[in-house]
Image (cartoon, rainbow, N blue to C red; front, side, top):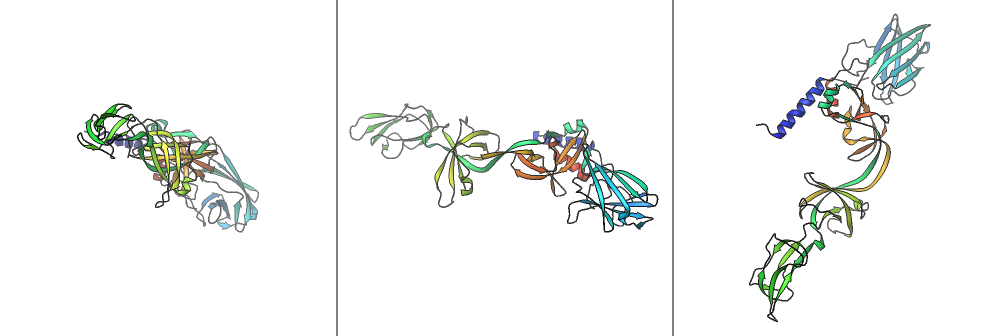
Length: 414
C-alpha cells in the first residue's frame, strides 16, 4: 500500500507537472540574450542588428560598471555612421501596460539612451530612427523571465497570489526554551512535627485537591496522630516516604499543578534590552503542531555569571496536557512593529540571476520583478523598489514558475 506521505508527494509532483506542461515560452529574444534562443543577425558589438535597406542599427544594452543603458551603433552599407547624423527614439511597452520612452544623444561612436533600462529587460520594443531624411521603424518582442500558465493548471499546482501593498512588520526575537512549573504551582508536603508515618493515602501520579488528607503522622512528642492535607490542588509528582518510616525534614510528597506553567527563555544582553513584561509571545511545540499566544510574565534582573544570559518567564494559559514541565519549546517574542508603504510575503521571494524577485501576474502571464528589499521578518519583506503597489504577485508556488522559466533557457548577456 502507498503511505499517506507518498500519496501526497505523488499528488504534488503531478500538479507541478501539469502546471509546467501548461506553461508557455518566451516569444522572442531582444538580441541581448533575454529569453529563449533564437537566430538573428548580430552586429560587431554582439547586439541585435536591425536592417532596412542600406541603413542598419545595432541595439545593445550596456551595463558594465553603470546602470543598464541603451547604446545604439548606426551603420550605412555596413560602415559606421557618425551618430550625430542620426536621431533615435525608443519605446518599451511592458507587461501590464507601462510604457518607457527614451531619447538618445550622440557619444563617441554610438547613440546613448537618456535613462536607465529598468529590470526586468522584458518588453515589446519600438525603435524610430531618422537618417538623411529617411524614417525607419522597427518593432520586436524582447521577453525575459516570463511564462504563461492556464488558470486550471495554476490552481492544480497550488499557485496563489496577493496584491502588493502596505503591511505591518513586527520586530521579533526567536528563541528556544523549556516548560517549567511556576513556583506557586509546586508544593512540597512535609510533616508538621517529626514522627512515625502511619498512613499515606495518595499515590504517584494521582490527582489530589487542596485540603484533601493525603498522610497521617504520629508525633514523637505527643504520640498523637495528626492528618496532613494537600496544600494545593494538583498531581503527585514525587513520593518520598513509606508507611512506618520517620517523617522529619524530607518532603513526603511533591504536588505540581499541571496548569500552573510558564516557559523559561535565556536572553543574551542585546535581546534582553528589547524584551519587556507584557509583550506578546508566540510559543510553539517543537513539532509546531501547537501554537499559543502568551505574554511575557517577567524578565529577571540578574544575569547568569557563566552564560551572561538573563531569564525571561512567559506565562502559559491552560494547555490541556500539551505542554508539560521539562519539554522544549520555541517562541517568537514580538518586541515592536512598524508600518511600511509596500511589502510582499517573505515566502514569495525567489532568486533570479542572483537577485531577489517576485513573480507578478497579469491574467495568465507571470513575469519576474526584481525588487529592492528593506526590512524583513519571517512573514513580510519591505519593498523599496521594483514593484508597483497593487500588483498581483505569486505568494505560493513561485518556485514552480521560476523552475519553468529557468527550464526555458533564459539568459541575460549583453
